[in-house]
Image 1 (cartoon, rainbow, N blue to C red):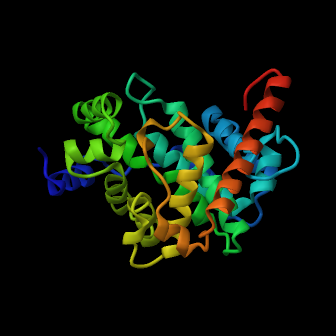
Image 2 (image 1 turned 45 degrees about the horizontal axis):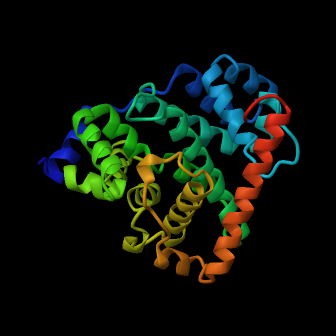
Length: 289
């Protein structure tokens, strides 16, 4: 069995810091220029169809709360705001650099749906609980499972064994990871976040999103990402194989003042209703989100 130290060294050595795509770099430069208009930004983003689709999907998420469908990238930029757009573009580009296409072991679409839902839910949960909403809450949610992509791409045989164990036994995916690698995707994602020189609080949010009680600082951010992850899994049932068996950490709930189990269940039901309503509307419109 590989040692955690070996895995960490391999993660931080074989995975080179990816260069941002030209479109992403141009977006970052334009956002930092106060003279940039939403129209100019929209034209640049529209040259990358995959990036455009993901930005529109985020803006149109039922959990983001905008009352009507956003069909143009220009309008999405206005709704999201320049700062949020910058963080979203960078985050999407970083994760995309790691991913391969879907196969029998990894569902790329399911991964993205869960990542986006967790990011938006983290932002919404922070707002609903009265915490200061920053784009880092969203980014932490969007990036929290990137360790899964690392394992799938760079530890293929080990990842295959993890999936087989999780599918054929009662073990959770995390327990299967521990049995094969002695580490989890959360720790792997944290090591990569360190390699990318992401802020320390984001590294913590990623590496501790399944074990928030271990957080020695940034308790609110870590707890928000953890709870948003669990809510997303409960709302989007069956779409997150790599989160099989997870549930709320009581310490995280207490830190956010969510000690009332009935209130938490009601919150999940409300989120589920929002998603179902969005699905029904999409069906009537002839498509799905």
